[in-house]
Length: 343
Image (cartoon, rainbow, N blue to C red; front, top):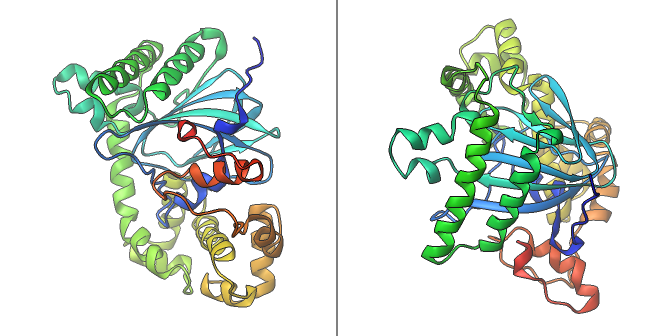
């Protein structure tokens, strides 16, 4: 297999793009065009900055263009190699963890309603690979099957049509997307999972919703396992096992990731001292805050602020196009104008 060369100007930083879009519920919210919710992006990542475990309402197909990574999904760690494809639905907490620097991925995000809107039973059949994902689902499709390369080619075709503002462009995108889905349906046709798996996971997430709502507004307060269990109406022991089964990590690990993500945002968007940020994000001890931050992010809070504080010389661009700020930083030194084709 020939090594793929992706132009650097179309690649966005995986961590800096995705991590700020994850809320306290651990849900990644992508800024789709609400009238046509599908997107294709190229992203790069590395060894130290790993996005925290998250899920999302959209469906995801990812092609590993270069490098190596692990797909952490619940309590499984799936090796992800160059030329392979991953398929992830909307109920599973997961993240991509780099094994090389850098790695490059092409990602396809789409809302299932884009397909369901066509109506008919056959529309639902397109989505079955995303609805039957149980604890043993084979999320990684090997390169040797030939499927990943075909899907990647169709992803690139979709990207050339975006943003799809004309009727013809939208028809083309939906046609390419359905071609991808047919490839996946055929690949997973023999898998024994059922839609009940999806519905069971949805019900489990609903049981945790009161806790997620509480964390969204009170992450900076003292929160103990006992109180979290009470919020969900469970015993402490049942809550601990239930939370880990649903999210793939312990409650305290989840809470620390949530708090550190908020701290990262405060470090780069405010001038507040470290002591104030540690207090605001629920760490009563600044030393412990620094220890947890370094363990999860790979550097100290001070180093993170120095590295990622935005350059005031670079103008803020359209917040609805998350790649533009990164492209601006990469091109400002040459006086070049960021291309919207990279979004």
